[in-house]
Length: 413
Image 1 (cartoon, rainbow, N blue to C red):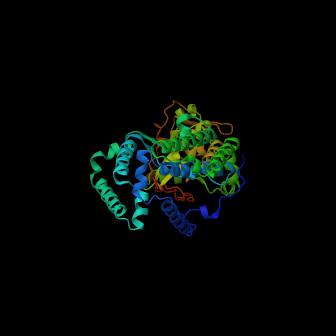
Image 2 (image 1 turned 60 degrees about the horizontal axis):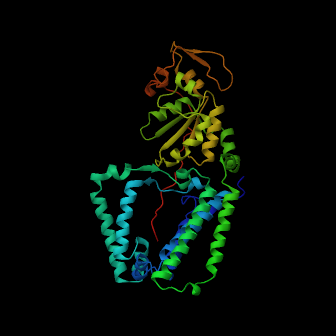
Image 3 (image 1 turned 120 degrees about the vertical axis):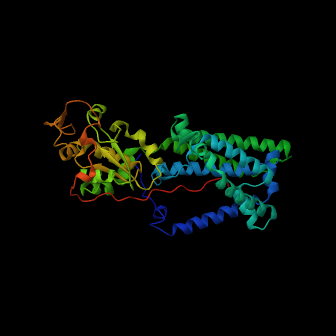
């Protein structure tokens, strides 16, 4: 479905709207206040969950998780939030398992997780203060000892930006509904454990919790029925602004600028050749990756994971037809710093292949190679990797790096 709302101004980057800091402060304050109000500043209450006597922690935390999940994807479904701009921590499976075990043992021994220890410390509870100091020492110790296992910590079981939708190959709405139903089953099971081990009288529990459960299911069903916007829907939302950039030639970079940028050590240039494999095999610019237009969407998760603020993507076609379509699709998926090679490979060859006898100009239709080649040598032609110092080409610089989103903090309350 087509998005119907623009992005609210208060969700713009901090550099554009410093008042966002105030929003974060208010959210943080009330988050801590709710934790204290729920009794999470007491290690006794938190430890009781491990004896199945009081599972408030599980119920509160999972309620927050499934509520946030449902509202997030509902916001995406109606077009007021772009999920691609939501930072999803990369999955490092084995380090995550080890870290989870360490944190779990610490939770059992100390009775706190990092967030709840801060809540306890803020109310001057001695055990909370000691736990916070221990966490600080642990962070310091990790930083001082991580070098010997740095490669394992960063590479072992790395899956990148992974979601349940990727793992199970299911639509977002189906996953949301299943997670909500799973959470409600856990809540019911938790209450039964509290009744058995904690002697809790469930008849005294508020009936309002059933209304909350029903509301969650209704919202999850709405996510399922509405679905998530596809690339065409997202492009329709940003088209007025982006079409103007295309028309004004703000994103089409000249071969000279591309050559100079490839030689610039301060830039991480990623060249995406969107032509058919046959054309790519005949000739392609040095270092370019074959990413046929019909498959460009499969690269989006990988491109979104690229953290470097100096990364520039250049899409390359035979001319600009297919490259422009690829540029639209990548922009629709919120990939930043994407440019088009002006005139495509044909213009590149016109600029750099004049002295190559094995490359001959020939008439061609739109979006077709306007050259013939003696052999399919790919990037082994001299014109594929010209020496930037041998060419003094005039061009208007177009590349302007945009700030990429930054990873946000995470963890339990």
